[in-house]
Image 1 (cartoon, rainbow over the protein chains, first blue to last red):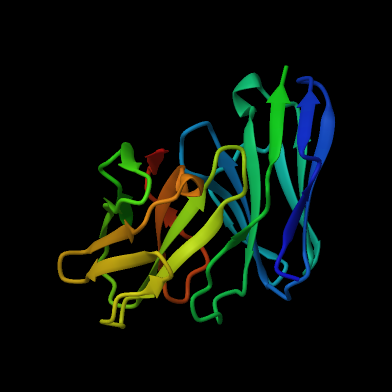
Image 2: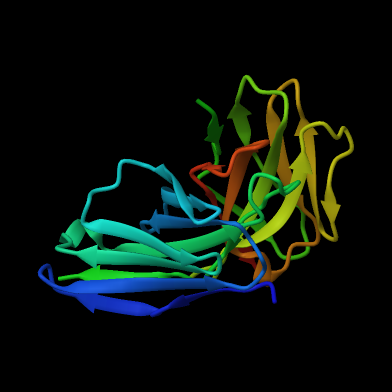
Length: 115
Length: 114
């Protein structure tokens, strides 16, 4: 299984809503990532989990709250978002620092629209 | 800090022809990895090809090959016999050995004309 899955595919939410994005991989990878991608732009790194611990937080606003319940799952909890947070949210995984290439495998993304 | 530069926002190629996408990077490290990722419109980002900095031999994957010039810090992607399915956004990416995070270039949008 070389797949990273993400749910939901699309999400529309109001600024007062609370929602969560989910990411799952069963490749035994020990590093998982959240990226935000605006149209025609490269992915921007938000968070990195390594061995289920948050290792990188790229100064992301607190209205985004990541969670890594186990080595296969990664969540992104959303609360009080702004319209400018509308974007494609990508999850990725990689073997971890010990991996030779450590290339990242990406999920299909969740397209988020904040009204 | 490492930076990755893709100086061609858009490129186009005729079907069956060859096209080269440029990428340069800036780093003071000696051990790192370089990648080209492809993101078709509204589709998943997938790895096209990868290169270890300590390997002099250029990586090749079927119709895709790279020209890795370590001293010049250049990592270009050559697509031979271009196909309509090659149309996508292509991102060059850099990762330091032992690090988790990856730096992406701004991307090059490739159009393939029939």
